[in-house]
Image (cartoon, rainbow, N blue to C red):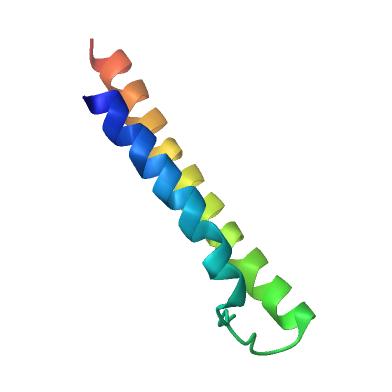
Length: 70
């Protein structure tokens, strides 16, 4: 029964697919120049890397403290 439901869902999706050709798609309008957007991406990625590096440094310091006290 479960397989039959999946089959019917697939058939209905296939029948309905051509109707989506005629719909209007709304794409977001990009703000700023390409270089400004790239700079923003680089800043966000750099911030993420800095955060991860800082977290790993804290973990390593704590692990070293635990080894030295044991």
